[in-house]
Length: 92
Image (tube, rainbow, N blue to C red; front, side, top):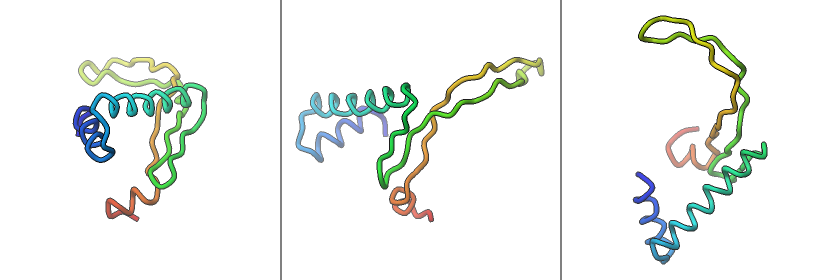
């Protein structure tokens, strides 16, 4: 499912126009991003949690040439699925 299909699905299920559904989704996405930028974790009970993890600097290799490259330290987003989501998909 892509973003357009998600907007259509939300629009149909909530009785919203596609424009309103897209605005609502954008607001949700932007709120999650802003919280992560501030270092907060976003927990959606049953669905899952979004968080940022700090990755230390590392040394990697260019797969084409085998040349060593430096990978700088960075923050990376992470998602952990919640219990209800796992159960809905047949997981434990």
